[in-house]
Length: 363
Figure 1 (cartoon, helix red, strand yellow):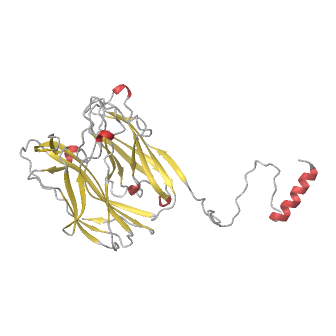
Figure 2: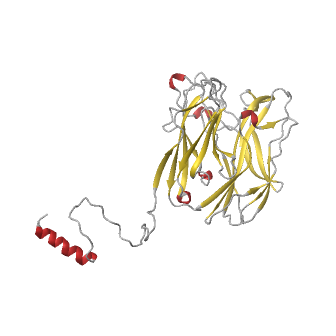
C-alpha cells in the first residue's frame, strides 16, 4: 500500500475506532465487537457452541471367548464438560465382519457407562448381532439416542461394551458419539436405575416359573423436577413350552417367540403397557444374514437390530413426588422346568429441570 493509502487508513480508523490499531493486511483476523446482541456473546462470555462435535471411543476392539479374549472391553474417554448446552447425544456402534470371520450367531450385546459417584454400570444401549455378517450395510453402524444419560457422559468417562459370545472368533467394534449443541427445553437432567437384569440373556427375569423377581420400587423425584419419564429396555429369550400357535400355525416358544403384554403399575394400577411383539425383522436393512434365520419376528427384538427402549412420560405436578412402582409380566406358566424363559430388562427413571438437578432416589 502507498504512503498516501496508509495515511488515509490511519485517519479513517482513528475517527471510527478512537485511534484503534488499523492493519493494511486484509487477511488479519478481526476482533469481534464487545457488544451483546441477538446471537452474540457478551463481554467475557464464551462463544455460543453450535453444531455437532464427534468423539471417538473404542476403535477395532475385539470381544470373544477363549484364546485370552474377554466378552467385554472397557475404556476411559474424555467427553465435553459443558453438557448442559448439549441438545442431543447419538452413539454409533460399528461391527465389521470381514470375510464372515466373526461369531455367526445372533448374540445379546450392550453398551454401558459408569456412574462416577456410585461406580455402577448403566446400560445405555442394547443390540443383537446379526447372523454371519457385520453392520457394514449401515453407514455409521447401529444408532442409539443416549441423551437420557448425558449427565454421565461428561468429562473423563468409563465405557464398556459386552457381547454374549461363546466363540474366539467373537466380534470387533468401533464406537463413537455425536454431541449436538443447541437449544433444549431443559438444561439439566439426571437418571437412576430402578433395576438392571441385563448382564446377558440368561441373567434376566425368569418367566413362567415359581421363581419370582421383585420389581417393586419406591421412587422419590427431586424437588425441582419439571419433566420425568421411564426408559425400559426389554428382550425375551428362551424356548419354553407350552408353545403359542400363531395364525400361520407356527409354534412360538417363550420368551423369545411368544408375544406378551407387560405393564408398569403406579400405586397398584396399570399406568403403561409394553407389548412384546414384532418390530419388523424382515425389514431389517442388514438383509444379507443368510443362512441365518433372521426374518421371523421375535419378542421385541431382531437379529442385527437395536433393541428399542420404551419411553413412558409422567404427568402432573412432579416436584417431590413419590411413586410406588411395579413391573408386571403377563401371567403364563411353563410346563417344562428344564426349558427356561427369561426377560432381559432394565428400567431407568429420568428427570429434567432448568435448574441443576440431582438423581431420583429409588428404594
